[in-house]
Image (cartoon, rainbow, N blue to C red; front, side, top):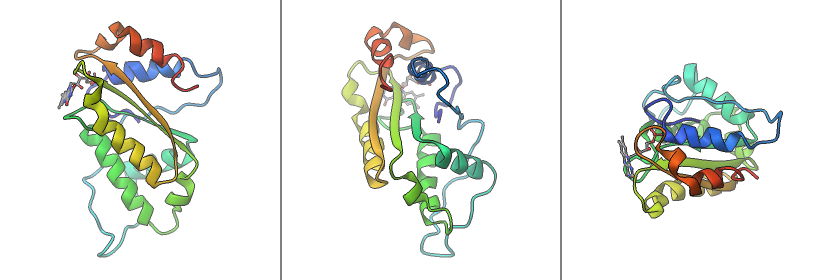
Length: 173
Ligand SMILES: Cc1cc2nc3c(=O)[nH]c(=O)nc-3n(C[C@H](O)[C@H](O)[C@H](O)COP(=O)(O)O)c2cc1C
């Protein structure tokens, strides 16, 4: 799930570098949340309840459930995931409550991974983002794969972060 607000950014570059190392034939599906914008999430748990998603939400739900591994590739925005990524995660809460979906049961056992790019030279700046994803994985009984961090501001910068590009090579091992 690509969650940057621009195309070809550092997060996507780093994610694609990591994915290049997957064994040949590994099935991958890349979805850009900019192509599949979700409506603002509305908490209907304690009112009329959540109904089966339609439109982009239905596509994202189907893709999420079909995956063995969900990779959230979000730039670091204000120490956290991007808005589109957060909205996608908020919709998980609706899907958890949608009758007939079995979201909790079907997410359990999948692996959640994070990939992020940040401008800050201190990798600790991404701790809140990593904590969000790690805790979400725990909440849903998912395995936590960890977060791949890369440094950069303008697109392409991350390729100069040699530690990150080296880590990308065995991130999904
Ligand atoms: C709205 C916004 C908020 C940002 N917040 C942070 C931040 O909190 N910490 C940081 O290190 N960099 C921050 N940055 C810089 C981006 O993380 C950095 O440019 C990154 O490479 C963007 O990822 P992308 O190239 O995949 O879009 C921010 C950038 C934007 C546009």
